Amino acid sequence: MTGVPTDPSTLHPMPERPRVVLLKPLVASPLIEVGEFTYYDDPDDPTAFEVRNVLYHFGPERLIIGKFCALAEGVRFIMNGANHRMDGPSTFPFPIMGGSWSEHFDLITNLPGRGDTVVGNDVWFGYHTMIMPGVHIGSGAIIAAGSVVVDDVPAYSIVGGNPARVIRRRFPEEDVARLMAVAWWDWPLQHITDHIRTIMSGSIDALETVAP
Image: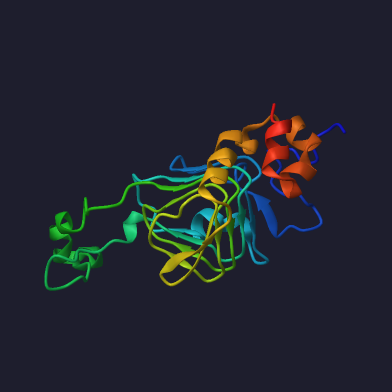
């Protein structure tokens, strides 16, 4: 078997389905990093991902998403810019209203944050999931539809709910370690292409056997 089915720099990997875009060639913000073949599916305007799906991104925190992730319609990443003060009587951000209130802008700058939001590789995000600031999601995880993720998600776990909790682990811990070590998403594209069936439906033993 030869040839790679899709150029990872192609915006629309399926021209007949413009609702699907690869995010790596789409994003322009230096604060967003996306790996190859990660896609977003939206029947409205998937090309507006940076504006409609990454919210309150006033920096300097980064959004980092790995390779081969699948993002269903309505996935939202809430960034640290959404934070309000909580240490006083009111959480209302008066200074953004302008006028003389803007003299107090120092009260809403440099609020404590959780740092970068980081997603591993081969993560599946269900319909209308929401990821809160600073969350780290491990490779191979599955985020159930409608979930609100407020805490870190272990690799190869399935989480769901609001707030999202671990429903179950996809594999035992020792197998997760093996999968992370084999890291198929970092293989050369031709090698991935040659072993698609093993990656999708083979055993971990088989995956280790064909690793380059």
